[in-house]
Image 1 (spheres, helix red, strand yellow):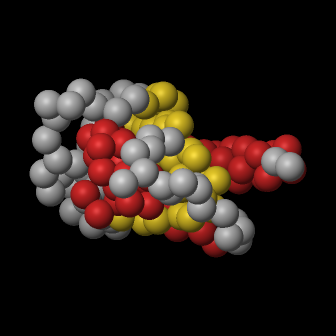
Image 2 (tube, rainbow, N blue to C red):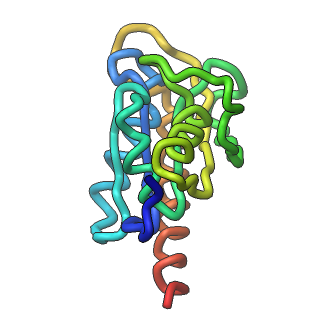
Amino acid sequence: MPHTLNTLSTLVIGYGNTLRGDDGAGFLAAELLRDRIHRPDIEILSQHQLLPELMEPISRASRVIFIDASVSGRAGKVHRIPLRPAPACARVTHHATPEALLAGAQSLYGHTPEATLYVIPGRNFQVGQELTPSVRRAVNELVDALEKELARHFVAAP
């Protein structure tokens, strides 16, 4: 059944394994944003992986921002990727993709928000909790940029 009113302007979902070096970049970025942003219309979640249960909060948002690490690409360079819901034939398992969650939100709740994925390529995905210096810098730069973007969005909103 479709939602009649969005309750979140923005949902941020940072995800990754904090016990696998640079894979924890998205999780850490969300944690840092949560320390800086305290607004009732912005929800920030840190997840170890994407789960189907995220479809409900995704459906309540006007916009969703996903943040994740990647094994490919130049370490420490952030890539911004606009997202669309996955095709109807996509399946959601215990390892869901952002696109599958968007499709599920549309199918189950009748709403798909505007969505963006920020990917931070890493270098070290071995057991350990430390990010490589280039990935740590990229996380901090992304958090700074998102904090400013969300503040501008708030000022511009009526």
